[in-house]
Amino acid sequence: MNDQFKNEIEESLLKDRLFGFYNKYKLLLISISMIILIILLSFPTYEEYKIRKNSKILEKYSEAILFLDSKDQSKGINYLTELLKSPNEKIKILSATKLLDIYLQQKKFADSLNVIDTVLEDKKISNDSKKLFKIKKVLLKFDNISENELLELLEPSKTNVSFQRISLLLLLDFYSMKNQTDKKKEVEIKLKELQ
Image (cartoon, rainbow, N blue to C red; front, side, top):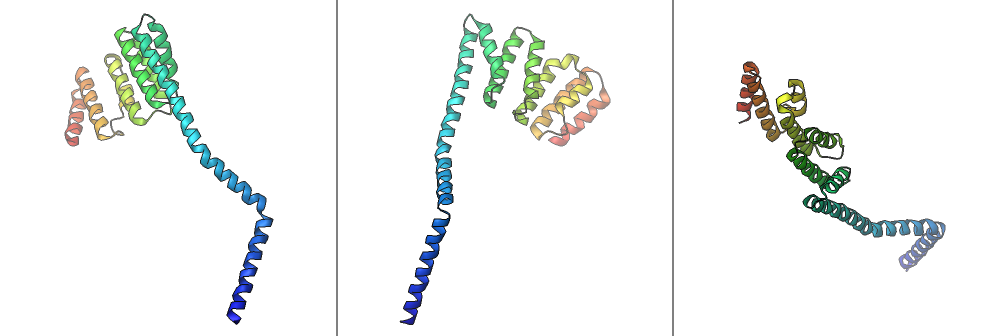
């Protein structure tokens, strides 16, 4: 009986403490609960917002492609140029690639280089995508590029194996074109080491 009475007293004290804690921190507990509820409800809303934003960007890209196929090609080029500033990396890369195709067909090499430079300066573009655009820049400027600029763009020692192989092959072609046999042999040795 003593134990039962002791348990009832402890239970009563615990209830009183919990009730006192609740009364003391009622507003704080309700506020924290509301904040957690708002955060949980805002995630789907934010995801929906991102989906809508990306769909608008994709819609604008589609319009640009349609304008390119119509008589109003300049409007399509303007849309693609605007999309280079888009927050969506994939759309930026698609737009840049399409602009490069157009400018190369029109033999506007300066405009092509400007598009590549825009992509290379963008901090939101992934390093792998930038490496591909650096290779495109090297290919565009290959006949008139200096060795220093070539090495700076290709970074043959800093890249992963796939890009390193492409970089070394471009260097090999460059040194062959410039009749620099010693450097050409060095590059050939590095290529053999990669295999």
